[in-house]
Image (cartoon, rainbow over all chains, first blue to last red; front, top):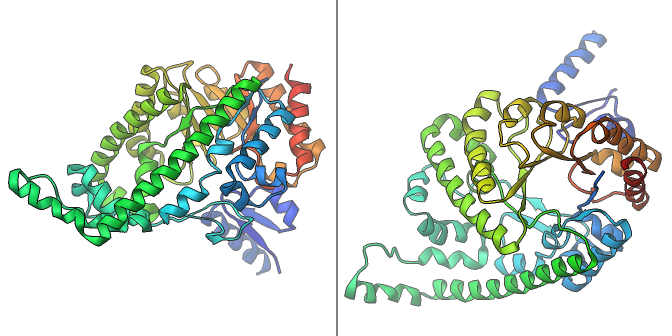
Length: 42
Length: 389
C-alpha cells in the first residue's frame, strides 16, 4: 500500500522525513493523487 | 543582512521547561528570553517572545474560551490550540453594527469568557433616563452580573501585572541594546471577523449569503482596528506593528474574493496607519504567491512584508522595490534539517535576495519553530553573520 500526507504545512522535507510516498497541500491534490495511483494500479 | 530573533514556545525548549511554566512563570520567562537575546545576538528581538507567552494567569482568571493552552485542554508541553467557533451568529450583524459596545458587553464577552458570563444580564442602557435610569441600575445587583463585574476587576488586575512584566522586559532589552521588532500587533478586518466572531464556516457562508452586511462590518471593523492600533503603537512608543495574516493565502479564497473582501479594508487600514507614522508589518502566512501583484499597491518604502511560505526570491522580484522583506526559513527545515542544510538555506536567501538589493530581514517563516533543535538555531545565526556582509 501507499501512504500520502497532506495539509498546508506539508512540504517535500516533511514527506522525506516521514517516509510518505507523496504529499499534497489541499483536498484537490489528494483527489488527484488518488486518481493517479488508482489509474496506475488498474 | 539584519537578522531577527522571534520565537514563542521554542523558548520552553531552549530553557528546558514546560510550555506551562513558560506561560505562568513571569520572571523565569523574561530571564530565558534575555538569555536567548544575548546568546544569538540578533539585530532585532521580538518582545512578543515574552508578551505572547505569559498569558497563563490572565487566561485562567477569564476562563477564556477561544483557546486551549498548556494545562487547560492540552498537555503541559503543548502550545496554544485555537478553537474555531461561531462567537457571533449570522443574524447578529445588525445588533453589532448598531451598538458595538452593547454587543461586546452583553453578548461577546460572555461567550469568550466563562468568568464574565454574567455580563449578559447587563441592562440595555440607551433609552433609560431620569428616575427610570436610577431605578434601572438595580439590574447591577443581580448576583450573576455582580459576580461577573468582580471577576472583571480580578482579570484586569492580573492583566495589569502582565503588562508590568512586558514593560520591564522591553526596558531590559533596550538596556542591553536590542531594538524590538515591533511594539505590538493587530489583525486585518477580514481576519478579525472570520477568526474571532463568525468562525471559518460562518464566514465562508456569509461571503455568499450576507455579503452586504459583511462588507459593512468589515468597514466598521477597519475603523475600530485602525483607531486601536494607532493608540497602542503610540503607547508602546514603537512604530512597527506586526499583523499576522490568516485568510489571505492562495488556498483560502479566489482572487476575486480577495480583491472584494480582504484587500480593500486592509489596504485602507495600512494606509491610515502609515499616515499616523506607523510601519505595518503584515506576516503573510502560508503561500500568498497569487496575491503578490495585488498587495504591491501600497505606498513604497513604508511596510515590511514578512512571508511564511511564499518563495522569497519571487516576492523580491515582484515587491522588492516597494517593501522591505522578512523571513523565511521553512519550519520543516528548521525542525528536521541538519545544521549544514540550515546554513545552505540562509546562504540561498543572502545570495539571491539580500545581496541582489532586497531589503531582507532574515528570520524563520514564523520565527523559530517550537521544536527547533538548538544547534539549528545556532547554525542560522552563524550563517546570517557569515553570508550577510
